[in-house]
Image (tube, rainbow, N blue to C red):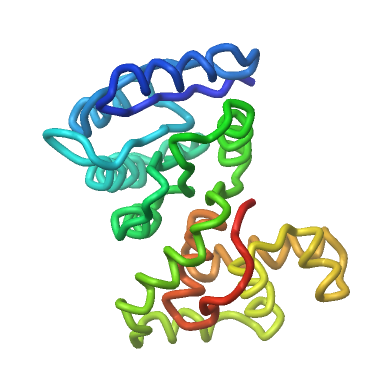
Length: 231
């Protein structure tokens, strides 16, 4: 099955470079490009991409607002098809916009200097339901801004929905562990881990592992000091 991808960046050269890299893959089709958030919303509605690579800082409307509107519209018009997923494009310098983009429903972010093969892997990983959070800065980023948000009664109530084992799985996800690593650490089978992950996402009302990481930091289940996150 072909993956339909849209690339959004206000720099034409950067946008075209990402598009060319992806278009060379036999299972990826670049269906649209956009240079602003407003163009991205219009193109997403018209072309219905599976994956959107979204820049943050753009004229007219930034990628954060565009991401929120695109994903909100999709939830309101859910037709049963696989959901559109957004990967945020950012520079090395992390900022609060990235964290807020994950809150809005983005499935992670990658650095703009990502190697071509890693970009392709990121698209396929996110399309398969995983999260792609750039190694090296993710935990610093999330923990830094999650501290500002506090825990809140709603977060505590949602966390109480999880069993003890599910909390352990959520903490392991936030620590960057894969399903195989979680299985080894908790002495359970990979299939059991997959079941627990699905249950955690369902009970907490989360889209994917990226939002699970954010939630774990927001509610205080995960804290700074763990290893880098990269799924």
